[in-house]
Image 1 (tube, one colour):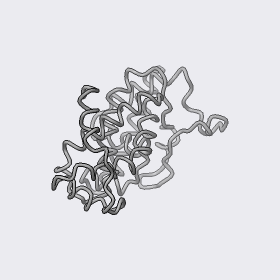
Image 2 (image 1 turned 30 degrees about the vertical axis):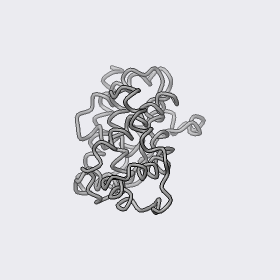
Image 3 (image 1 turned 45 degrees about the horizontal axis):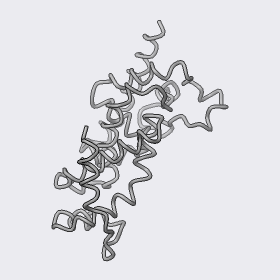
Length: 213
């Protein structure tokens, strides 16, 4: 984990928001940063910040913790910016970093809003009905797999999934990334990502069933 003071020092270096760059042009912004215009990174922070924090909050169940992890993700991404190849959205690459950090912390959290692995695992490979559980689903019997007493079990089960299953599950449900975006971010064939997601959910379901046995 990056020290808070170090993260704040890095982010303080990009406070000024440039006025001559298109905020939607990932490649141009990254190239500007790599060329020495550190302030250009602010465009990415402002654009991706809300979604990154939201994704981390879905993993951790705590807004303050989510904001802390999101900040760490942005600093980590900033330091590794040269490794982004531009073959997919910058947001998907950033989400991959954020999810790794958030899942790493998840096993220590007491509360979390998690996905519905039973419903998702029942879908055929390649379908798009995979979904996460939200607060609004709480009154829907079809999406009430996760209750307060089971959150710790689910959290532990996801944290112990082998890679690449853990990463793909986290990107799909917590970061709300499409399978195509996951494929681009992880540099894996789309068919492979679909298989990893399906198998990851199946393993998660088995882990939960074993924990109840």
